[in-house]
Image 1: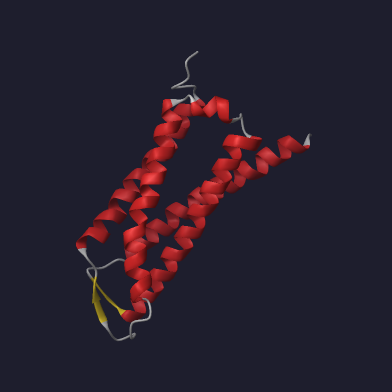
Image 2: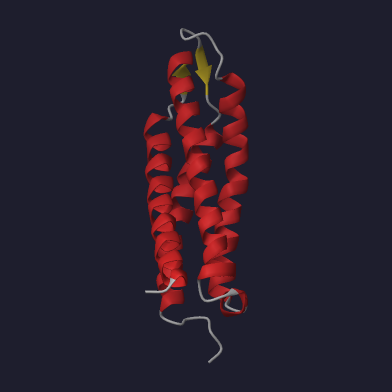
Length: 151
């Protein structure tokens, strides 16, 4: 067994675990998110959101390593429109995460007994991110079957 094969397996495994963690944490945010939150609940949700970001960073880093280093190489992926769409959806989900994160982190030091109204758009963003993340494995399966390659 070569070192490159072991690296590929370990990075691929990390990528899968990070994707699963990302989805679990997003679902945890969805469950915790209410139209109004106590300061204590908001702090817990803000912590979940930070963990979501950490998982997202791991997904991004491991995915980048798979693309440029230990996987099939950049040339294999960069010309596949399914891959580009998948990456675009992921980056859109990252961008959409910024507003909820800023909202939560700027209010995390609220008094535990405060009642904080959560803008409806934040709850909508979380729902849309769930839909987007549900699409990503489908796109990965399509890529694995060679869909999008010009062969």
